[in-house]
Image (cartoon, rainbow, N blue to C red; front, side, top):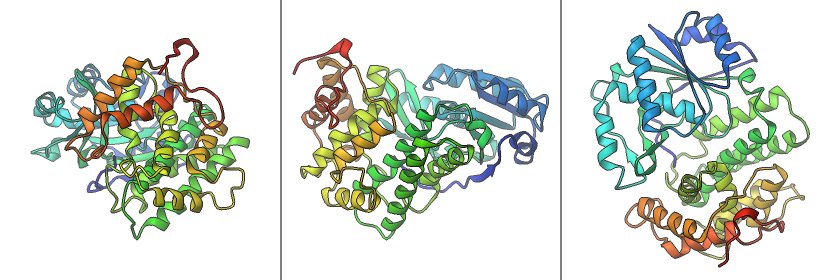
Length: 403
């Protein structure tokens, strides 16, 4: 989903290696670092620069759990921090954002425990004393989620993966440093661009016409253009451009005035990824062609056929190498960008995923309103069993299932 941007994030773009000399100007009081455990070199450089002597906590880049939050909150309390600097991908930044809020208002943990069974989306209540919230400075090392500026975060609870929303979840400062993106495999840069592309495209297709449609189409063209360049060349400038585009999907004009729940594929992909243990973008890449195929057949519950056709025509204008059919065209992009889309899923997993999607996001809830469990099952079967447009099976060979 997308969230209202009522909390302003200061966005800073830096050349490679500049953050250690600049980040101190963005902090206040006692500062601590929470970093991806695989980014020790970058973390050490921060501690050799403006953040010399700052305590650090290393985390594995796995989905944020309640135990992860406890570890980060304990780190905050032990060192009595005023600012927390997060370095890593979406899960690390989500852990930092959530810990900053939960340490300011411990009652939020009780709120989440009480309401997690009711819906996949939890809109957190306001913090009574927002000045108690730590300042957050977020340094992304991946592309796609835009977690450094978004007002949402994912949390794995005892009853499933939940999306938490609050204006206070957006970072106080977001710093893009080309050096932090240098070790990211090119395939993951392209995967992140696809995530950013689908965030905008899915929301536009699931919303009514807007005065900002041209902004959306323009942003999508730029994302596609950078992705096409990255296929043949890989430079720090292109990686930084990809990260800026990902950030812009949250901070620019393209999603203003949209249906915040318009990208309906996200909710099903969230449940599929959680139940199969696959990465969310792997699940998304498997799901989006059949979802768009359903829209192309006039199934308005997934989105507008007219808006999808117009969007694809506008965005791919001049890109003759892509199929003019949106479902087939996006499948070609996924293949050409080498985004994995194999999701091992049995019939039981398909059944459970569809049931969870409708239970957590459908019915009277606005995210999947108008869809039923059978429509979701149909898309899941198509994604995990049938051949995709390029002819390659999406189902893992080690777990073939029959319909």
